[in-house]
Length: 144
View (cartoon, one colour):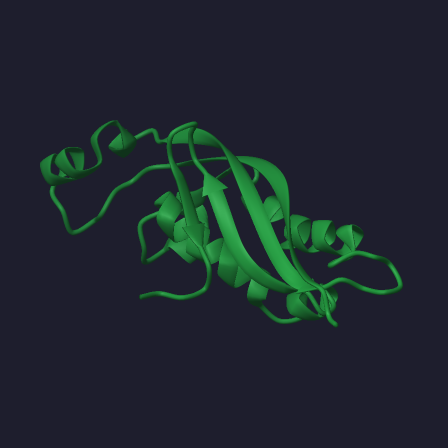
């Protein structure tokens, strides 16, 4: 019988952004985004939780090799966004740098190219991104 287990790991990074939509007036942006529309931006200490799911290896007793998972998250997410202004990242050239959109982009970055192969038989199940103590966002790869 195959034992399938979910495993979650937390990571931290800091980034700034400004919530702003070019086709709205300055007043409309302020009404929509409030203080998050500050022209100088604002920052967050994000907590990213990555959950993978897969069979428990008979050899290692683990769902995923932690060294491999850490390397993928560091290379794909942390190195890209830590201490950066999200509005300057090409991913946000045509969409608002909201944490909802960041959460979906993190998912996509962890799904691209060789990342799934580096996770062995484990598959990305969900990403959760905490923006503040009260605000967090989750994405599981399906947009309904």
